[in-house]
Image 1 (cartoon, rainbow over the protein chains, first blue to last red):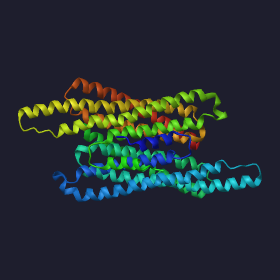
Image 2 (spheres, one colour; image 1 turned 30 degrees about the vertical axis):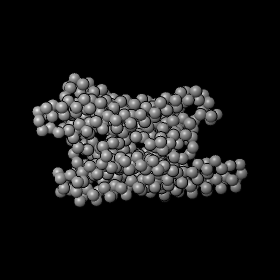
Image 3 (spheres, each protein chain N blue to C red; image 1 turned 90 degrees about the vertical axis):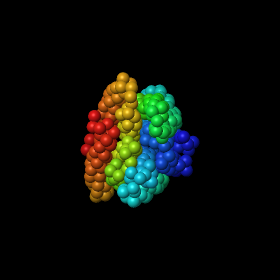
Image 4 (tube, rainbow over the protein chains, first blue to last red; image 1 turned 180 degrees about the horizontal axis):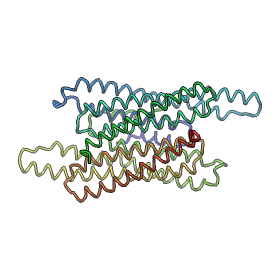
Length: 210
Length: 210
């Protein structure tokens, strides 16, 4: 069931190698969350009971698949952006010249390493919006999977948030730092609340509000 | 970076095949969350700065590895338990005899399909306890990864919760249903709060409380 290479991903994650790390893991967990929405779509189409919404669900599934693919690309982009940053941290700083080079290299790498998890956050917000529609139009027999999917997308968003924040703390460009943190804060506030609301609605649908 | 078989897991998840589903995905996301804790451990051992806690961290890493392996086994067990349930749902119910057989088969399969996600919940609570210690003793440079890990374990716990609840709703054995739902409710209340507290502490450590 759990393929060998999935175990390898977890093994690679738990090692001291710089990548994959928390940013890439967030993108991956987001893709798993989105896949659960697409699964609900797969279970809905072709069912007579849901013929009225079939065209809508097919569009949702296509959008969901695009988000999965984007998040999978972001796993790789996070590693590509983080590696130079981890290398920059290791540069020598014995002379004034070395200190200057290290700082410049670090700041350049930092911007890239910050924008990737911000992109993961944005992608998860798109995923949470889609799950809301899957919750409305998807088959009732798999409603729990929409709830599981939305809680994974929320966790991925929060994980990516920490990866943005750990980098903006040492960012020299205050204008960029402010711009990134403002967008981040707005997205996190709006979409964690939205994810919580969808999750609660799914749980109520399962238990009848008990 | 993202191995082919990891993409296959996401593909299999998004299909209409009965397994893997939300329960197995929860166990898998829990294992990813725990792996981030073990990664923080890996980055801590061998560092002079953390020599005092090295023995403790090695024990934490061993415990974390056991939780990862247990969760990976639970991915498979969830599939093994869910498949007979999905088959039972498809049994005919044209005669009284068929109705009786279907109900008996369904209820037997249901108990197994409920106990596996409950086990996933328990396993995630162990993981959240471990992350608390990784947050205290792990290297400061990877503190964000403890936060990401704990939010994944919380999401896995909440995902597994929905998979317990969707099954207990149709469970005939009211004593067992009550017992399971009481344990579930207590664990979810205690450990989502604990996970939120650890996550907030990590975020404060990153941003200096801003």
